[in-house]
Length: 116
Image (cartoon, rainbow, N blue to C red; front, side):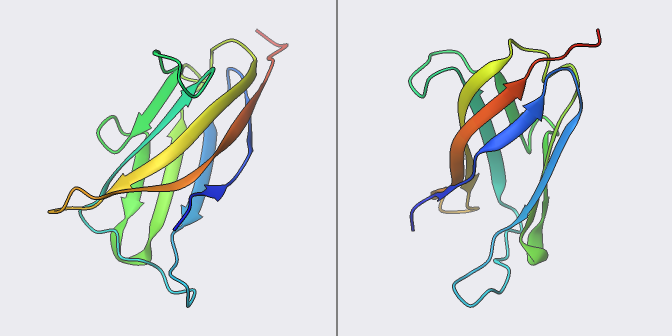
């Protein structure tokens, strides 16, 4: 399975939310109970520093196991980075096997904030 391509727009200095559901080929939700997840945003895919990291560990990602729902939330502070284009991906790690699945990837257009 290849990662899905999903380009995103985030407003600088504002809270951002995204909810997606991981479904199998029949359209049924995949049970992600006990999975972990992480999303990183970088200026280039091979940049050594992530401009933003959301994860199940830091509270930026919440998983609804049996329903396959993944909720992403970046705070206004986390989106307060330089406006412009970035690259990101979202990876889920299975319990027990630690198998990683890159679910989605793409570019983020971080729109400049005017009101400060």
